[in-house]
Image (cartoon, rainbow, N blue to C red; front, side, top):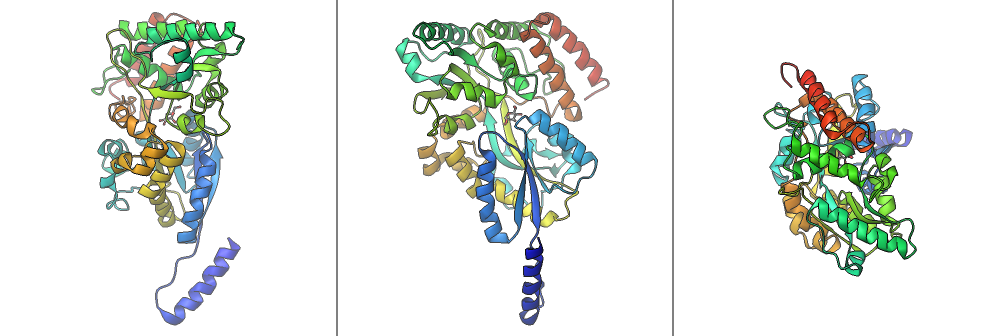
Length: 423
Ligand code: GLC
């Protein structure tokens, strides 16, 4: 900081001799983001380019990878008017809840907003205010071990039933052959937002709706949703380790990457990491759409992350530049090529470097475009409570605390009370 001020002082002195425009002082920005995989190392590398072109430095404030934990912390900071953080990486579901705390980016992004998928821009627009700029998008996907399916002559499963049967066949066979640690299926079973994502996929793929429908009606208490969650319960301790009830994305990936799972539900980021030099499953796996329920169609939950500027930032202009930088085509291309992240810019899905480095990216375009959104728009500022009531009901069921039917009935009553006269 001292150095920057000194430099700026020297520069402004020099500038005064030649021009009347005063150069702006270099600033130190603080950027906060959850850490999943090696995201933060990636950010640190990219920010060197930002500093080289603007002179502004960026300090990364690391957070846990759980979006639920991040949200709780950010709400506290923002409610207290914290000016220490300038730029936030925000989950796609947060825009309506945090809209008042962030700067409107409409004017700053007017030349680039057309490059991004309109649905994502719409998800970040609240009452005409552009709350955050898209950074990357996400959709749930099934990872499977090509080598093990070939060994046991099993096809890639299309239904949850097939998935569970194949998982059991391969798990039993591999254990008998000496791999005592292998499991059939790992997913995100912890009581947090990730379980909302996974369970929404089960329910939707059974034709059981999306918890709260776009028209605001509460649909979750229905027989298809009950059947979907009861089916997931049968996996616990048969094809899924009991510990899965505490797994988030990274724990699932840990089991998967040590070669101890036949199938995994995760987001695209696990693709590049699974093919990394230190991964035991490098080159041994592929991805497909998640399975569906009886008579249903596959469903992937829509995820994704965006970049917002705090309205309490003392350096909003520099912070907006940083947000534009992270959202830019160049940055998104680097993230797609090295991290298999799905761009929010349509043109990048056909980019030859992206296609070559991470074939999952072009293959995921349709999955993402058809992904099911969580009811964060319908439930507005009450979304976090809707989601936590939902994941609690699901987690209770998976843990053996009450049947899905009883837990969804209680959930419906809670959501009805929460909704009150309207969302
Ligand atoms: C991924 C998704 C995000 C979601 C989270 C749940 O990071 O991109 O939208 O909320 O997973 O764990």
